[in-house]
Length: 332
Image 1: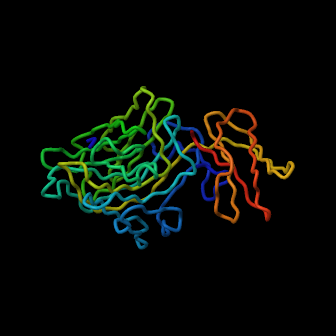
Image 2: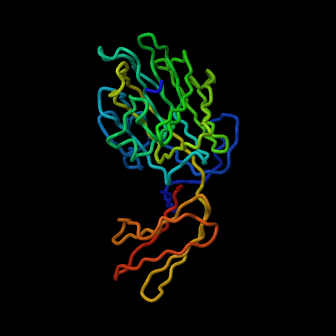
Image 3: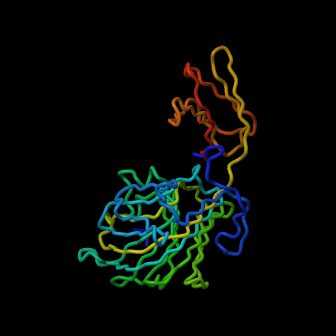
């Protein structure tokens, strides 16, 4: 234990992201999603993987009630991003966290501490059978805020962390920093692809609190791939010492990511084959998708890397009764 974008996605908006975290640095215009939990998040794009009993919408208080229990299976309450992000991108996350109870070393067989976490995941990686946060070497593609409550001889620790696609851990351990029960903490995280730096800020009850050291991703070429923001309850399998049980709420989630490049689409028939042309940008991949019937999308051509020029795709077997088409943009 280390102490696909679619054009015109509904519900996402483009704003200046500089005010999200109040970390003092501006960023370029970005798309954002704000979740106040004023309505059932499961009707607003959120999903559950793992043990759904660990997450409950509190309609009366408009917040998400969370149980972190390392004795139970890996579980994620997550919202997919329109496309995957990597180390070349700028993105941000902020949220409120208030704990009602937390105990590290809750298992007699594992008297040391274990983490609770909120951050970014790659859904296919995190929900795969080989994913294991407890070993510290089998949990790829994470950018998250992790907290270890005090237990045994370990002090309370706040640890922002990046885990690369090959499970290299880049943490920042900050201790003693205790997220005290009953206090409301505002967590802000901002990753800047140009410098490979993850900056984290903390407010306690609305007041600036302790400083958190940056995480600076190494220059050895390792990257990461994330495609969802998530509240994470990890199983402690693989950690011979640590366990945790906690209850609390997560609220007022704001996530921001760069706008995908604008593109133009055009379609035409040519000798019984449906052709689609689109402008492309380097650093992105493009794939033609078809829905017939709606809304069941499947890839019919690509993906292909952007060139800075026009890309052309063909659907050699278009349905006789018509179909919907779109081009999916992703980071390669």
